[in-house]
Length: 348
Ligand SMILES: Cc1ncc(COP(=O)(O)O)c(C=O)c1O
Image (tube, rainbow, N blue to C red; front, side, top):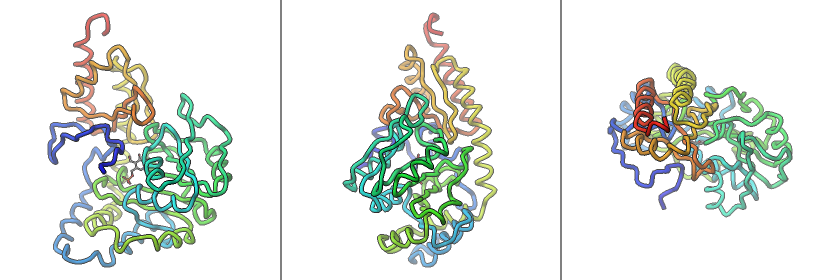
């Protein structure tokens, strides 16, 4: 079955290398992949007839030193989906925010686990101070969230962690956020599970690798569930490449932090948005003026700019727009100006 995950597209019209389409829909690296990862993949290609001997161990060790945790607290996974699937086996019921990342309810449904939504208010913060969570529950919280891009208050997260048996903190967008990581607490809280992605600040969404970090006893419980050599040599070599290149991660993060307010500003100044929220992730949220929305969306479409419509993510009328490079931002700005200039005078 084709997953419904976050595409909003139906059939994706893109072909690899089709630069005429501007992809501002899936929060990928605006600076391309890390050159160190590309180099290492090319060098390793001559060994593709071999099983990936020793590579899981090498990348696990590099991840552990990058995150300053111990090797037995790290498990590499096939992206966030495998991390969710494995950790769901620890609990009886799953919880996650709504609106929120669709991977949590999707995987819970596949695993046959009851799913309880945590409702958010108009500021995209939890409606209830107290959640009715208890032993046997696993709560999935993305800090920052997607599509909301904001962070929840530390005291609220602490209260959830106290009440639920397991809390999975998804730090996929951590590098772009002001919130401190909970990683330093992993060793003293066996109920805490942390996810880190290679897809955002590491610029490697194509490799489908992620890291689950938890107390060594929990990782030890989950490890036997793994298949034989579950991550391929190409992905592992790319991961090892970027981990040896912290300058790339720093440069990508700095770009996002500089370009994100510029993107928010150009959207706010475009005259076609009713509301813009900058977020703490690598995207900006915008709601178009209802009286011009169809016209603006058609103009974006004609100019081959893809953004993520958030209707199916629980935020009707909102668009999630990824931070691009500076040329991407100029192209978006020019396209929105064209859209505005073609409105009837009374709507401009
Ligand atoms: C909250 C959240 N977690 C995880 C992911 C994806 O993680 P990965 O690409 O590492 O599987 C995304 C992707 O957009 C996300 O928004």
